[in-house]
Length: 195
Image 1 (cartoon, helix red, strand yellow):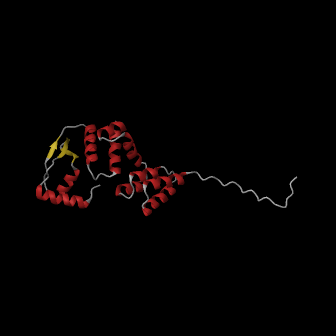
Image 2 (cartoon, rainbow, N blue to C red; image 1 turned 30 degrees about the vertical axis):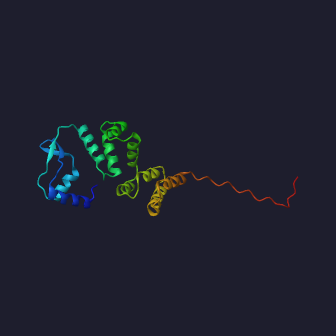
Image 3 (cartoon, rainbow, N blue to C red; image 1 turned 90 degrees about the horizontal axis):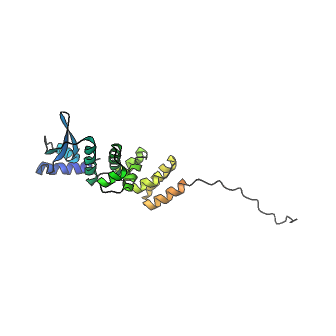
């Protein structure tokens, strides 16, 4: 997901100064596949450039995924869901969570937490993408099994601007099974005689 305003500013800069850092591509049949530099490529298209500098590299599919993942992690505006999809793609190609974390200088638990966000319903993933929910909020929501309660908690987090800690506490509360109430004992009759 690219911010249109940021792309517009980048396109203006490219119009004035050109593309200073080449994109990275690899041969794919009679064409080329973009590996790194999608943001620069999009901005160059907005600036109506017909060509941009590119470095052609010969990499296999596994290396292509790894290079793209590393560049995406280094991109400051990458949202957590995009990052989770990148981690998932790399794991699907045979890498462990530890190996993925090592390549991008993150620990395994960070990779695992990102991957868990993909278990959220799509509308909650959209909240994370848009910045309405943080990764911590998403983790709290994942602990709520009941979809209706989860949706209610999400609405409350967004409406009240709850902290992650407060959200975690509420998630624990709504996830507790409701105890059936014990039947009330009738009050003792003071006039009743003891045997």
